[in-house]
Image: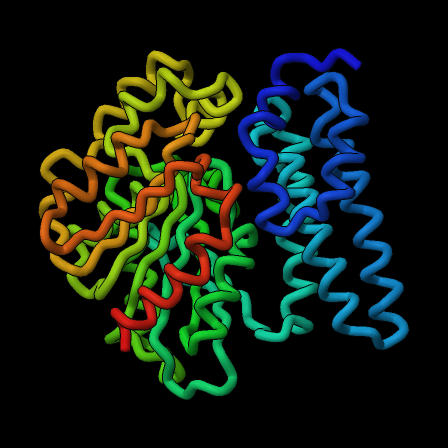
Amino acid sequence: MERDARVQSAITNWAPRFVANGIDVNDFTRVTNSIERWDAWCQTWADCGAIHEQLGADAETRGYYETAGEHYFRAAMCYHFGKYLFVQDTRQLRNAHEHVVRDYQHALPYFLFPGERVSIPYEGGATMYGILRKPWYAPHPPVVILVPGLDSVKEELHVYGEDFLRRGMAVLAIDGPGQGEMEFEHAMRHDYEVPIRYAIDYLERRPDVDARRVGLMGVSFGGHYVVRAAAFEKRVKATIENCGAYNQLENFRGRPQLSRDAMVFRLKAASEEEAVKRLEQFSLQGVAERVQCPLLAIQGGQDGLVSPEHGKRIAAEAGANAELWFFADGNHVCNNIPYKHRPQQADWMRKQLS
């Protein structure tokens, strides 16, 4: 089968991410082997998601709630990876996204660490939505805010959250401007300390978590965001950035076309030229050096989407507060070697927030 370039690009650049974040490897192989044209990408993944939705509903009817939770979660991930870069058809994108939110919400009470969908007041009377999960055995736990990247959403960070929860930390996964539930009305913004400020303000009003001990963890574009947020939001006690770009404008030109299209769409730009202009603000120059809390930078040496030099530069400019974990065999976000950094980063965070 001869695939078009966009289908092959999605498989080549992101295959390990699918499997590391909740897609069954058999589903991945079967679905991607059946897709020749990019126009069929979203619908084919939606068909796979519908299978898991039905399996989840059947299990729920029979009272098999653990099984229901697993299938609803897999359904959410199928719909998400169908629409994550499918910005040329906003109807399909929005429909798939609604399934992501609904299916994950269905699964949420059935997880070993259940949680709640929370509404966080945001500027201009808007709402920022998040998923808060807490370890039942740890009263008044610290909280790690999980920040998605350019094409990820709060639901995709579920597996990351498991590692923190098992170590006694709560997790709040959010969709900030340009992400997930905020991508349709709100453009990406460079000053991500603003949504983080609203998130921490919200946590401070909750008596069941310790908002004096808040950490950040961000992946890809979210890695860039959390460094920026830690530099200007002094309530942040520790930060993990994974393969975030130091300079998003510099990084933009070398990204696959699918990724550039998604960036134009989520910046609310009319063209690549306009996106390039807006990305001038998305730089950590003069910012990384202002991070005063402990910072862990994770970088893969085989990263094909963000040059490894970006992670090294972030750590170097953050200075004595920073630690660099460089994995020569890691791809983007080191999704091909999650066992080498995901449990270990949770150990690192627990130490910082203890």
